[in-house]
Length: 442
Image (cartoon, rainbow, N blue to C red; front, side):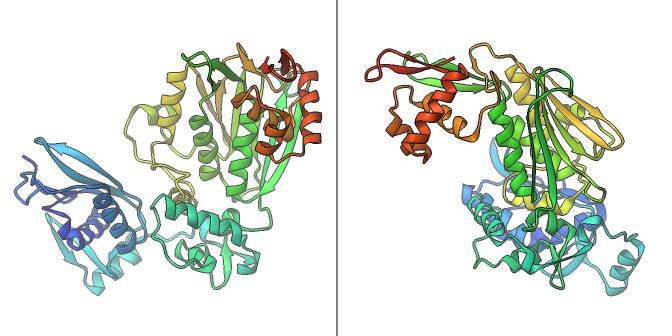
């Protein structure tokens, strides 16, 4: 039988949501972490009540609306004594926390409202050090990439991590403390500035050393833009196996490194980077490995492998940036990114290595080789148009130039020229006649 403690609270059903918010704030102010259960009576006995997807959303939304500063709990269903209950795990070090504008403290298994003098002592006693993220910049709301803010808002609403409200770029920035008195903070600038505040260098090397490169690019933009650029660059320049399904007709495209691991590693790099010094994100693709270079050392005393093996608390260098990316679901759940990377790579037979230095942290993925794969580096790196055409051909080997044109948005003349280039690079070849044949991927 469970019992309530200073950091564990029971609620019979979600009809006690308001009381639960008070408990969450009280526990945070005392212990900085805790758990609330819905579906357990005060005596620790589970209680049967209906739990649906909307029930979990209601809990998440209530926490989102009620607790300040904002926290990002884990809300999931757990079975206790053959009954489903809702378990809410939460943590946060940005005390004091309020619920509905009031402050509480946990005493034994009860929540007590803080007196003004107690609250003042907490705030005075907490050593304040303004973080890099909250420092104001010279950029104003006029410098914001409103389109990018809108894309973020739509994505956050779609994944139900933000309520649907009337869109306002200024309102979004203000909500996440990304602007102050009309000026962007450092976090707001790297996330949503239209003036390309962050740099990304990407290269494909011919050997295991950096002396000869096959392709090199430098991009500048905000974090959201560069995450997509980095992921797409890796996707275009690794090997893809093309294998037939059991029906002998349809094909699967299998990357040599799991895409979920690639994106997770790229996002982590931008979330945990140091931006208070001159930095440049970097993607290095070698014949035997892909390296993602994170500006700044690893932001934890634990190793990446330990995060994959144990339930360790997340360590965030840039909490505001992480919160924004969490709301758009670029960050799935705090503290689970490295576990996801190692799990998907272990399943695929891809080895993951890391190097931690004073000025950077490097995560490396081994490459499986090009057995039965598309190699975009044979006779030179492929262009964007070549990648588009190649992708369509992979999905439909019998497609005509007209069909390829319709699927890529390229003119038929451009498609014809790109197909010729792909044949020259020995990436594709025509089998059979122009009328009844098909494209073979080499």
